[in-house]
Length: 396
Ligand SMILES: Cc1cc2nc3c(=O)[nH]c(=O)nc-3n(C[C@H](O)[C@H](O)[C@H](O)COP(=O)(O)OP(=O)(O)OC[C@H]3O[C@@H](n4cnc5c(N)ncnc54)[C@H](O)[C@@H]3O)c2cc1C
Image 1 (cartoon, rainbow, N blue to C red):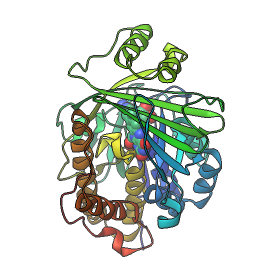
Image 2: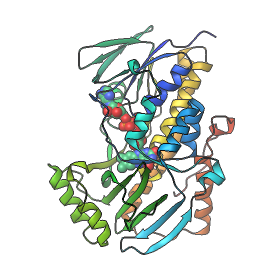
Image 3: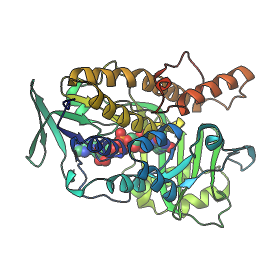
Image 4: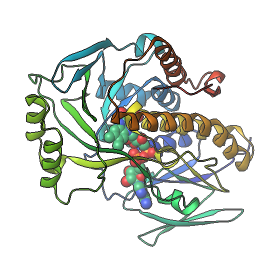
């Protein structure tokens, strides 16, 4: 079959843009990635890769999934504590037993490095900040701030939650603040710390606040603190950021305060947690969206990167299996929009729920939660059943 596209320009060398380039190049499509950063630097926080994301990466390129599993931390246990340090519950991770893939935690930067190393270096163009495009029946011309332009058959906006491609394409305004501020960083993992045992994820819950502690493998750990705050303005300096998080977590147990105190202020990233309402259409002519640019969501369910890898797999599949671009892109929209809209909506509601005291889940909602998790984590590129829609509303 004649290829739907020969040349593709992808904006953004985050997990989504890189995974998509790998998937397309494996199908002999000449995909190039354009990234505004001047170099790849050790930035970002820790994230969790689950069975749905890992299966898609495995289907794109098995070597990547193998390397990630060696680099990251395979989580055995999740413990939920109070901010006073009392254990609410400890659960063994059932991800491997139930879904055949580990619950893997890894540094965003290592994920980026591993994905980038699976591409020929000459197809990643750093220091290319996207500023606009024009399209006609035959081509799309992309413009960068360094005055370069690129002609391609398809432009993919994988440029994150503040996507400029989405702004040019749809112009649907700024992300909306979900009412929670976050502070996060990656630091060296000290085995003798009394907060985070090896191979564990620890979640601590305080009043209108939550702290995630993740082992990331290779001697690194992540702490990510979130608090419900009406004020979403950013601090002016790194010192102010650190003072703010120390103030907001002042009534937490001493080891938490010490952990924050011991962190280099320059390395704490302060961000408001935002999303956008789901879109009805992602693809227009020769331009489409992917990852956080298409479906920015609260990180509470740890699905941002995982759903992004689903997008990458499905977009490459559609471009290879349909005979013309418009049919391929509308199939991509059909496969992805409903699923990601549900996850976006539910995670957004849960993020707003941080405002309320922790509730006991009754048996019915526990069952619904498990069904929802099955739908989420069962996503398998090798099975047609992955495209089944979720049936109803659920509290996650
Ligand atoms: C606190 C927090 C915790 C999270 N935890 C998890 C988790 O546990 N699990 C999970 O799955 N996800 C998590 N996420 C979400 C996850 O980080 C993202 O969903 C994921 O990285 C999306 O990938 P992406 O490639 O679409 O976008 P991004 O990772 O945002 O990458 C976008 C890329 O585009 C580049 N770019 C932006 N603008 C331009 C431009 N104009 N021109 C060129 N390049 C541009 C950026 O520099 C960047 O490299 C978390 C997010 C946050 C904020």
